[in-house]
Length: 262
Image (cartoon, rainbow, N blue to C red; front, side, top):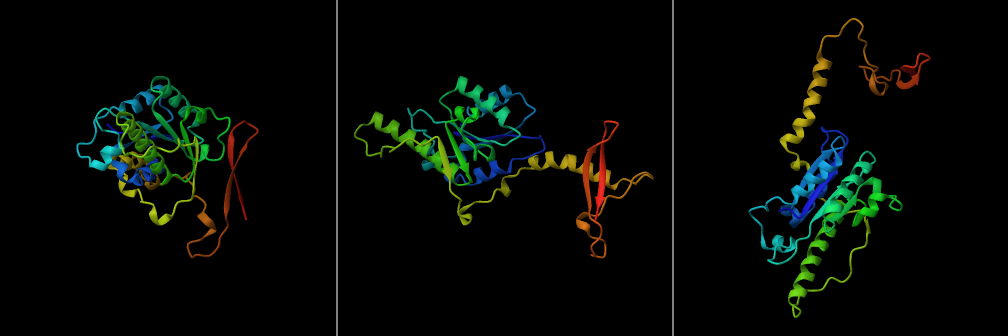
């Protein structure tokens, strides 16, 4: 079964989380022990929590090298460490708070790691931060894997020392702090995530896009009007009028588009 679940609540079903795939691509030797699970904010928080817990009960991959097995805490008798990493954004912070609260009620031992812009700049006074075990602020492309590795190896080392007091396994020095700042990563070390997109990811995005293309190609009716040219350019490359669309309330209570131009 996986030890790490990367998840977020997208604003729409057609969205595919770019950040999750970056984190997964940079997990290194922990990749075989991780999965991505995406949801959208229209689902019930309890259903999302149940689905995430079900992910942690999935069967482990059939092929695991020795180092990955040790990192995952699969030594017989060792209690496994389970980690769920959440991407927190302005559109999902409220719903994700409910999801984490539900998970912690039934499985408090699961390590919850938060990241994303909504918890990178303000951590004090946020309920979601109180519920989490760790919060990575800043760019977590490489830091997330580092934190997961410390949690997994630390638990494994502690278990080995308990069962074998004379073991040469090094004892974890200190616990990880709750708030973990991430330094700006060296770009040459970052793995790109583009090959992680599946056909299903593209299909859910292309379906509404195909409808838009179909609408754009339909014959124009007499009352259809041409859209303003973007960026103020004409067909011959010369600068033309730049249209700016603003929205206002009319006296009748309807929203109207007003065009202003240079």
